[in-house]
Image (cartoon, rainbow, N blue to C red):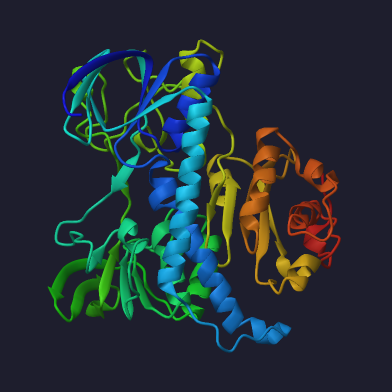
Amino acid sequence: MAGTYARATQVLVVGGGPGGYMAAIRLGQLGRKVLLVEKRDLGGECLNRGCIPSKALIHASLLYHALRTEGPEIGVRASDATFDLGALMHWKQEVVAKERQGVATLLKSAGASVLSGEARFTGPRSADLAAPDGGHERVDFESAVIATGAVPSTIPGFETDGRQVLTAWDVLEMPDLPKSMLILGGGVSGCELGEFLARVGVSVTIVELLPQILPGLEADLARELRTTLEKLGVKIRTGTRATALKRSADGLAMTVEGEGGREELAGERLFVTVGKRPASRDLGLEDAGVTSDPKTGFIPVDAQMRTNQPHIYAVGDVARPPMLAHKSYREGIVAAEAIAGLPTRFDFRAMPSVVFTTPELATVGLSLAESQAKGLPAREVRFPYAALGRAHASHATGGWVKLVGDDTTGQLLGVHAAGERAGEFIAEAAYAIEMGSTVRDLALTIHPHPTFSEALQEVAHAWLGEPMHVARRRADAGGH
């Protein structure tokens, strides 16, 4: 019922995404009275409009494509395989709903209270909660955690409308497939959803301003993916700027400029995915005395996730890059433990990341170029999936794992992989780097056979000059 009410809580958590709900759960475990406020759905963008629904669509497209292309070669024939977008969307929604309910159950079991609404700070220790029915509550708190995430960035002239010009959120809810899709932005979302669309028969063109798709990713990984996308028929324009967009009932015409000059690309719809910005506006940060970066919108925090107001914390995408759900999880836990007075800090040596394309791309630690820029005597070695028994048995030999190590100390510096299940074993490499392991440590760790994870042990042996399942080269002789 609409009206004005008041309540008090020890901790107010603003935002129910990965960082927010993880903070609330941990705070509940530590005996704190917690109120979590979420204006949309529990789980945030990751669960509802990002990580989980996109992987559901990708899984379905891989299955459909494999039946039609890979299947006959290995004796599996399904000549009548069809793709039903409506059924897929229904299943995807069931997956999301089940996950969302799981988050609600976890919060309840931890003793955290949850309210639907929008929170805005009205002072250093107070906030106004606007409920969906128009009612308002004043909440007084001792501590607060800001976990509002990020929202898609926009470009003037390319504003989204949910029909012809789409955000990633729109693509994940499309009621029908277009014949063609232009994608403005060759980052993770553009490549993942672009491949999904291409696998189910949509003509896809990706336009990326920077020289490579997946800007910022290790260059070999980006090149590997580009090859796969182009084999699927995806047209890729890198080093290309979009300058204008014409909309009509018949479709879209996007003017671009690149090395080849100016051209006009036609498409039925346009997916704009040019990054995200922190959702730090309209939170009343000024009233709370919390500072944010005027250029980026990020809220500066220390190692305990405290803002400039020691009792107010910020976690996840709103606090700092990289914008990764698993980083948000850890930050939420650190903030909760700091509020409870435990000795804790957000400190890491290796942040893994995965791009869920084909091949799956996974990376952690330093690249060779980054290592050399730090003055380290680094060397890299690559091990091909083609020398891996499990890869042959799984019809997935097109991949590799690359290891970067310190040529003086033998310390493991980085691992980068392109291939089946790469995202599943990259955490082992992250753990090894966190623990200060040497390449020899990785080589001595017995891996189960036959698995894709054996590639880590194999590439470690190769780096040491002791390759087991690839021919030894003179240049590889010696080791640590």
